[in-house]
Image 1 (tube, rainbow, N blue to C red):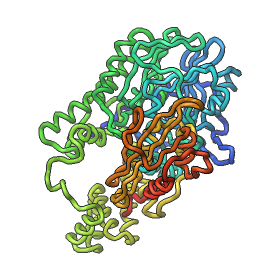
Image 2 (spheres, rainbow, N blue to C red):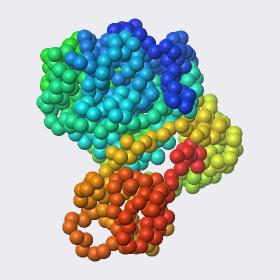
Image 3 (spheres, rainbow, N blue to C red):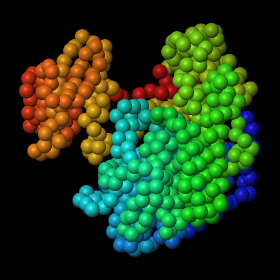
Length: 613
């Protein structure tokens, strides 16, 4: 593939990133109540130097832009705090107070961002809050903006489906996603020229307290208007784009357009390396096209939930048009090549962007990449199987690794052969070969160090921030083992936002099926709608190792072995390990059934191995 880069002489992005600067947070570190540092922007001061040999110059440039932090004026009445978390917090001034858009990841960083705004613009009450979409870096800091007891009467606006999607990721594959996110954002890496320098979309994620205040106003259709504190807002729903629930919106009187995370200054992910449901790049492109027409002529600046704004109506149109074409081209060319018989990896090697897009800094693969995004499009339509039956029933990693090493002549010969590929500059196959050796002999220290060295070099050459972090974190774990990561995605408000079926699902996906094969039990949960309200009966059935559920309308046809009548808060306490007696839950039937059910529930290891067997 071509390695041609846009011109480094073009300083437009730097000019825009610095425009409207009012002041920075000094010092740039933010701590939690217990003194723990949850964010430190000052550690990236090394980015002020020229690019070293340990980083791709294009990624270094992107990191320099993302590391800028402070309060910025976007246009009259619209301000952004950037560089205090992975995402931006935008503040719109109303008649009596302020509307906060996307309160970052952590309550601590959100509170610091709000304080920075007030330092420069004065004390104003929060009169509204908007979540652009359902990812945690756009709602987690909500309690830093509206502490408990202060949210009454404050409209909180979000796209339809926000709450379900905001919490569901943590139910079904949350443990695996959280572990892989450590690699994606380089959470355990030092911040240094030869280590973590950024993530492309921003520098990294904060490590503070995550919260969630449920929305009070749902946006359900494009063209819907809401007025908050005298500020009129016109919405465009964009479901299934960068997030399952997302929206763009316009402030007509301010002539400012919020693009959420649908158009940022990099190629985004169709499938993130931490894992997620594959996004629909065709729909993504279509909604960007709709935005160009729907909002045409009504704004002078476009800003997003990450990176820096774009000023000038025509410049925003060009930016949106190129972003539209980027996702459409990626989608259509992947399918063209797939329909010609190429597999995902083959397409990833073949596909190239048109020259005009490749020459645009905002289309570069700092966060998503052309390689893994094309594989994601392939996966969305055709799945993991490429049609070659040799790949249908391959051995799992350790067993296939042992056989590769045996074919290569044993561990010593495999190591020597891998070093030949390193010397020849074929780092990709050297990594493949050494990975087999590590999986075949997990105690082979020499093989681990050789593989770590290869990962170092692959990371240093990566233009993509998340690829770099994956490579360098893998090298770190090969050398030092798995580190405990201080990432806590649980909090009471997130749990309360889960529906009862989602809470039951959180148990179902952790049932040890083989141990439960021969058991057969039924538990009814009558969950009260309020202190005096009627309850909804949820029937849980464990049969053939599968826990299934359904809502029972009216009287049940057959009795349950155990019926529990409880409030949702009591159900959460039960799932947290508290007893029926302690929680005061009314029980009819055999309480031992509950203990039997919970005995099959496993607790996943949050530090499971990835780069070793």
